[in-house]
Image (cartoon, rainbow over all chains, first blue to last red; front, side, top):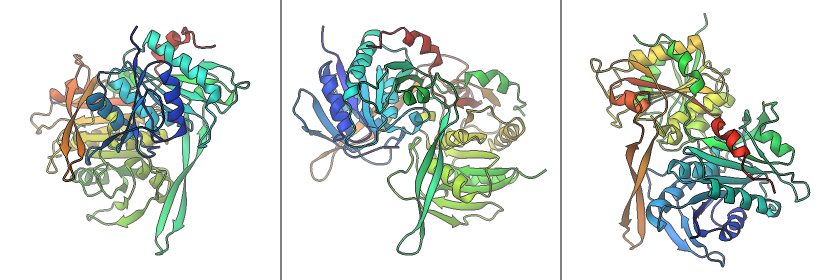
Length: 257
Length: 257
């Protein structure tokens, strides 16, 4: 059987330890093409570059069979240009990450890592975003390795339904602590924003956006629950965002004049 | 009864004709605070500014009772800083737009206008994104005015369920052509990307991202259908992106090692 063609990207940038680890894992599974941002792009959400130019440069960062390109754009740009300009054919799989930091719950919507996976899904490619709940540059990805491999092989075997991608989050835990995998729903949580207000050297005000994570969800079937209990969470994510449960109700509003 | 406090933002920037029109309409309904980007931010998706500073400047662009601030950040930043630093209290409503160009179907995920409305929803504020299917700077917003007012008043009266915001798209049509409002689901459509490959003056390659809109959805209950038939489309949008229909199936995968 031919090896699957795997596209790898991320939002922390092509030199981040998380994507280097993901490349090592995917080299064991398929033929790997890396097209990732040339600089960190965290918090970029589903941004695309429409009023500026894009550049792509072939590079060789580590030894290995993978082929690599650094792209000046966002994670979503990387997926688009990979498919349209770089890959020899449509990939069999798109994996994004391993993100340094959690993309659980509502983070799915702010995350460049998950947006790249969602873009893969929009293009009809089975896609997975992987994140480790550890922001540290020296995060330890070791305990997660066999699970990432197993999830990936399952996606290759079973495929994913149209319109669905996977959001995989891995707790900060060592091999002994890690309890396995839970299939979850997205927790109802949010960032309660806080702004650090400062004065610049010219006397003008500026702000740093910060925030406090707030989990409003008491359920034990959520990704937040799984992660705090040392399980890897998998949330299947759909990008048809229609609130189907509200369609009939809003049709009863008195809207037409 | 006290007038509702209305937060207005957009992604085309605070000087765009679309937001000026929306300010005029909302001045008839409530007490208006405008916090919008100081420059165009189209295609920014749900991007937030986490590695850089933010600035907000009080300005007065047009006469009228509204109060206005220009913000250096993305549309989502605008909503966050408005709520946390500028508004006297949590707003009763957040409206975003009127966007110059369609945000129907999958555009909901790329759009800064819709991301601002979704951020309002995440923060528990009834929120609506308005877009006109006309990219022109001189687009005619006149025919849409009474519908925008009616939709807004309905949202104030009925509120919206937790986790739901509205994506309203208005076809390019005059008052006679405009047929009314349809409640719709998000069409299954996508941008088939194309890249315009060019050579810079130094001989190096660069790209412009462009794309061809491709509607794969034959349904007559979609926003795409409504818009091409001269109806205003309203899609209720949810930001719990869990693919609930796939949860039971994926639980049967052989994932735990």
